[in-house]
Length: 263
Length: 174
Image (cartoon, one colour):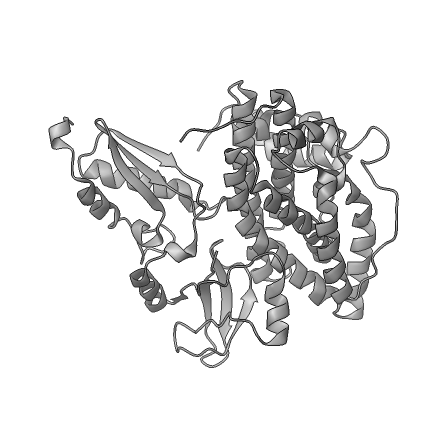
């Protein structure tokens, strides 16, 4: 199949693909930490399957990133052999799991954004991006349906579950702004019609989030200081919280201790 | 293998139709619709496969099973290509396979009920207008309820029958 590759600075393209791939990878890893620890078996399985989808999607994105970089690195090399400062995921996905409600709230805030992003990427100028997005979007629609259902069930649940969901929302809200932060890389990618500018996804995200949180009887926090948006920090720029280091220590241990190890 | 000994493509398709899915052995790879193309490139047999879910761990096993089956039938030069587009859909599962699933105890997909991310599913369920009626594969009752969106594999959801009280898997529509 002939592939028309859009004219774009390869360095910017590689950077952007790492952002998309790393979001899926780090959230997938975080969610996988629940395996064997969920409140009930069905939720354990559901979380593990969500993690599996995300890690599968990350393989596709990072595989393409390696191809665009052209230095012979595949998805595994990028996942296991980069250090924290080379990761480009947003801070939201590296937030600790907290309780089950906090995990589901983080998932919902992410899924609502992820679904909007993938929907837009289906008409990317790069067919390789469009086909990964078309595949991933069908899976993410299920993630969003599930996380929205559970946010509503727990928010509009008992006094205890409601209080926990409100606390989770208040704590995570300050990490949602980075999802819509645009920089020079995003400008270059938008110019090449590979992806829309991040800020253009905000309206769709806000509509989903507002309707679900309202049904969940939760109070949407007002304007708060947003991590990774002001100043020079932020995961998109490779300036992470201390949590990412611990994730990588666990995720990368085997390849670091036994380079090239397979089974 | 010289080109004179290249098996007919129909023969190759038949061989592939005998390879069971590693997770749900009651159906085969062609039943699932994941074999997208079979072709000869000179003396190399190229089999194009599409994954069901991005992260499905069975994908690797499926590729090994295809390779083994074809080598057992004497195909020596073989290449497996991955094709993502168009993405796999449960619509490609054959009618025969749906019945095999049901007999095996897995409710087959109900077409046109895939999640669309617009959260219409929930709204429709609340309004009682959802078209997602999943019949119990054991007793046929439509009095069933979803236990979890994700079941024993990514492609299935967990359901429970309110009549015969059996839990069962639903092969969800995607």
